[in-house]
Image 1: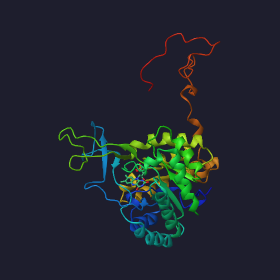
Image 2 (image 1 turned 180 degrees about the vertical axis):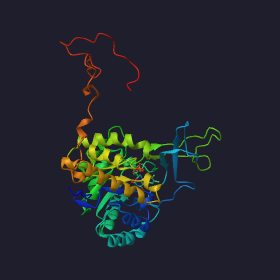
Image 3 (image 1 turned 60 degrees about the horizontal axis):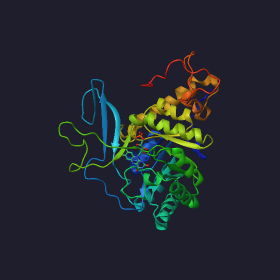
Image 4 (image 1 turned 30 degrees about the vertical axis):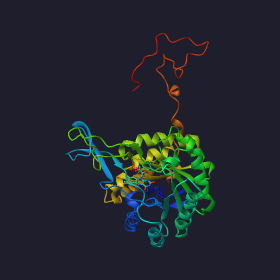
Length: 381
Ligand SMILES: Cc1cc2nc3c(=O)[nH]c(=O)nc-3n(C[C@H](O)[C@H](O)[C@H](O)COP(=O)(O)O)c2cc1C
């Protein structure tokens, strides 16, 4: 049976379900052109805003590594170290909307069949700020952008009315989504922050506001480690650091847990999975939980800035997977989306050894025999 790498998501047809997420790989026209040439099915631009942006006077991103020979997690270069995570405190694009507008148009003309998604961000503190969302949305869609991703999730914003500070407030999530939807002629994806108690609450706000999809997740709020010799943070400016965002392999299981909550709560809605993806196997976990597309950042940053080898491996992995499962009649990604969504259940629903019973930490209901020995405490692993 022939395999088909295409995917339809929020009404858009992607040549494959693999996208570059909003980040340095998508910060320029040349990068995005190269990304499409390399084969990415879609690209989400580095977030575009209207407020002034100046980044820190030092490295904006570091890559932490771990190794089998020591418990150290550090940016220190050493042999046989493996990537643990990326950490960044980079702000949104420092290029203006005027800089972006002609470039978006040129990219779309050069690649009319590829999906270009504009990531946008403004504030939420007053009507002028809310109008900024609409200005950004209209400008990007007028240049041919196929969708908008609203950034409600940047973890390092000082402004109380921006980024993940919006994403932590379900009402603001709803208001901002609605304001963008009022002018949008293209699908609107809401990119949520993982830094909340229950991401389902904010997702509900986004869907009530009219979001066509949720992207999850952005980076996790975090700090770099302190060097035990110099006693300085491994990244700092004049000794100082502020919280930034963790990405890469370390967040894959964390982001999967958020995604599982989302896809279970809204099984009929659309989700774009992000966090720690560098291989098809990683992407597969997101698909099986219910995502229709996935996005990649850290792995692409470390592969010629836009991930040519990563996208080749993702497409090859999907092709091989479909061929291996041809006997099930699977020919495209839609055939297995959400297949394991229902396999994440409450702890008490997991089978116990035959002779034991467990009632989720509650006493056994009347009529049941009580456990013979007190419940064991300690590690559940
Ligand atoms: C240096 C850097 C800059 C980023 N900038 C943005 C941004 O402007 N807008 C956005 O929505 N996400 C931004 N992100 C978050 C990524 O798009 C992505 O959600 C996150 O890195 C998790 O994916 P990963 O594990 O593949 O890196 C940035 C991430 C990094 C590492």
